[in-house]
Length: 401
Image (tube, rainbow, N blue to C red; front, side, top):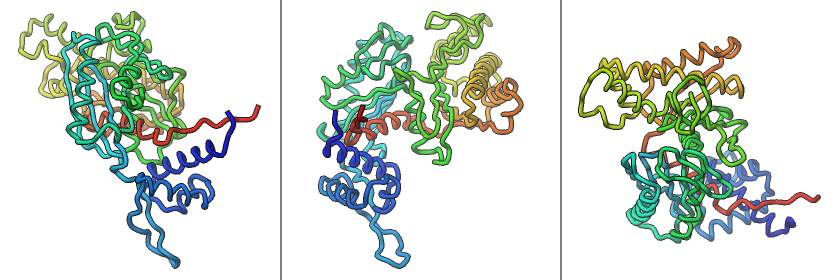
């Protein structure tokens, strides 16, 4: 494909729009400086975007002698994004405006034996319902973003496998949703999108390198290096839930022994909890109820020894995995997310102590392990941000052979 004038213009338009989204409110001079696009070209693009309703001018910067510069920002009502965080057995949805403000959110909890067809049917209905509740028409929806656990084939829009969902194999989820809603659908690893939302809202821009650990039904990670994600060939980079941390450990859902998920994922912790309760002859109404990491922490803080033991083991193996990531990548900032209200707990203390134990001494003083700030209702935000990153889809420029 040749780099025609039209393609170059689209590339500049995409660049200017993404600059506005990332740094709004922003002046024209700042856009020129950050994008390195010529001032006349930026002015022309700004005029077009304003006429089409994508941006507005609101306010001015204080003058230092000349004419005050207008501040440019995204028109919040220009378009909307739907985000889905499919962390089975819990699924969360949200709708944001173009300014990435959450307008509505929804949480659905499924039974553990719910099959793939039922989940897909339910998900489509939930997407329809949340769009109706917000009161927007489909022509205003820029797209739908999906954060998917398990193994994905991002280039082809396929959810290859989610082990914990019955019959979920090679689901062409992008095609299914695009056929239903007639808008673009974008899929990405769920923990990658949690990290996107965390960075968007809570991580200072100076932090260019960090590892994000997602504590979910299984354990995932995202690697942010030089300001960009490491995504991998098919979008599965950071798939540490199935990294072997003890070859003598229990059988994992993937068919191997001793994976991190088999020790530290919520599903594994629940299996261990139920086995230990039965072994101890303890009967309670909550024995068969699904427990989150937060639930285990609350039980341990009330003095329940079984939950304390489970957390200690889970924290130890998460710490081993984090130490290996730090040594492999030489990235020393680690954010633990996907679970709220765990700061200053014995569980986090176990993770930190294990990391320190298994790191070489040179890194000890530099390592910064912190708990993420995302709230549950913000978990689908990363999927919405991912959709909004496709405003004026990035053109593919060609190099001359």
